[in-house]
View 1 (cartoon, helix red, strand yellow):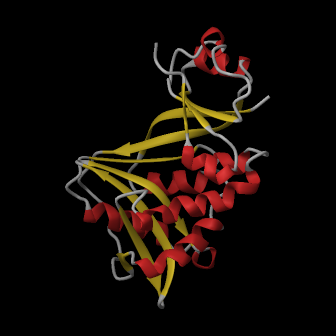
View 2 (cartoon, helix red, strand yellow; view 1 turned 90 degrees about the vertical axis):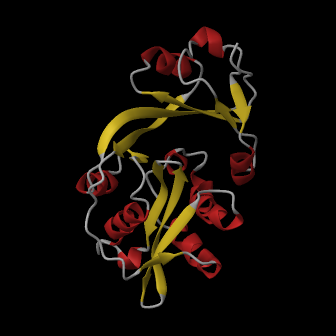
Length: 231
């Protein structure tokens, strides 16, 4: 039988209690989930929106729907025009700026939407971003520099011919200036040898969906995120 869950040590350190990820993405019936200990501090699951039996099983086992995530992809070799003058490789001295931007940029993620985890959400997202500098997250990061100040960043995961946007954010002071668009376009140009480009964002995040649509991405699949806190 497939292991039902695994411990998420990084997340546990962020929310100051044990955290567990449900491993299967299908077949999560109430009967199967009855093997899940009721005293686990925090569990989360990600299942395809059309996996109705798994969604019902999770809800019947005490999990609560948090949000929906859209996976967007494109495989074109035609990329948007962009300004690269302000885009550069990140440096170690950018860490604090990246932390601050990530700390104040996200509101649609599952941690902000979970009332019991909301207090940790800003710091969690900032920690996620700067994990790059410790070699623990992502394979590349580009930043947008405006008058000597880091105004935005994009964190990437590049695996062979797969290009994935892991995280992107722009300082509120520089919002609505097209920086996010140019960061994505510059990153795609840098990795134009890839054959598939993907990103995951929240279905509720209309600005992000509009951005990626402008860049040629289309929704490939939708997943539901569910959480359960210990009883």
